[in-house]
Amino acid sequence: MELTGALRRFFVFLSEQQALRRWVTRNGWANRAARRFVAGETLEEACDAAARLNAQGKAVTLNLLGERTTRPEDAQAAAVLYRKVLEEIHRRSLHADLAVKLTQLGLDLSPKLAEENLDGICTQARRLGGFVWIDMEASRYVEATLEVYRNLRASGHGPDTVGVALQAYLYRSERDLEDLLRLGTRIRLVKGAYAEPPHIAYPRKADVDRAYVRLLERLLRQGYRPAIATHDERILAHARSFAEAHGIPLDRFEFQMLYGVRRDLQARVVQEGGRLRVYVPFGPDWYPYFMRRLGERPANAAFLLRSLVQESPGGFGRPSGVE
Ligand code: FDA
Image (tube, rainbow, N blue to C red; front, side):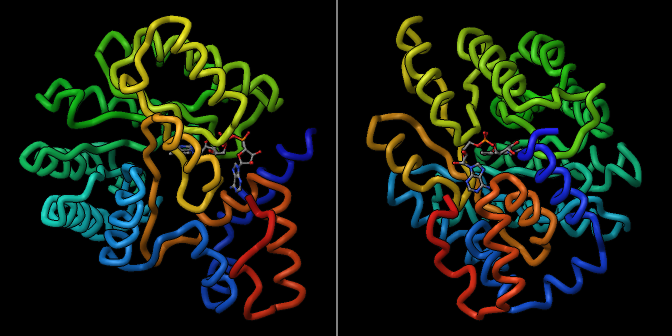
């Protein structure tokens, strides 16, 4: 198994360990470390971060952290908060949209509940001129997620209100992409962040990257306002040259990157006239998201282990070379 794949699997495993979660989230150094990838715990902190990014010419996607909700009242509370986020985006005239996870809105409890919660958020988005991205989670949720998306479209929410992420590492995504293109869908293309078995997803990174490029070319040619969500410099360069070679203007698609990741690259995209959106997560429930980010890069994981050993208060504050 490749080292990068093994590392990701290990951190995805850690992200699901409740005892470790309790221990890590109580630790001061871990809280400071998470701040690299998470804008803060409150909506106000997230909106302040969004305003700062907007001032640098970057659009934003706000995400209230949370997933795999086990109580209906928590799912409903998340939906209420999301409507509040939309109001705040509108009130502060932020250049920002939203991203939600369906398991946060109750998908594990019932797809109907998640759909009703998302419907309420989309109705609010429509009223305020906002937009909602549905994040894609582990493969066991993909079918239900796409079903919820299709139902929302059938009930009248248009492609300028709701879009969905697709993961290049899944074999099924080529077919899903074609179905979604037929519906005229805004798609955010990502590589995929979960630990999937080899009969479901490409186990080798090189194959994931190749699949990403195939889907990317299809999206650039046929997609409706697609989002190329990656920090992979080679893929970014390919997207630009492919667009140029096929006469696709730079404003027909956007690049998306994660808060705190490759800020140098983020600045470069803006400098070169590309459209960039930064995914800004916030909220107290940061543990699984943080663990997935750590597992994406050996240097991040090494930094965590060093901090664990040293338990140094300044530990993660300014990790040199974590990007
Ligand atoms: P890759 O992993 O090949 O990394 C390329 C380079 O980027 C690395 O060499 C490194 O320099 C840098 N880099 C990447 N991750 C880093 C990190 N954590 N810290 C520091 N540097 C890092 N996934 C999913 O399954 N469902 C979803 O809905 C989403 N949504 C989403 C939205 C947005 C806007 C982005 C950018 C990503 C996602 N993802 C996601 C995550 C995605 O699947 C993937 O895990 C990460 O983007 C990392 O992969 P890259 O495409 O960056 O490539």
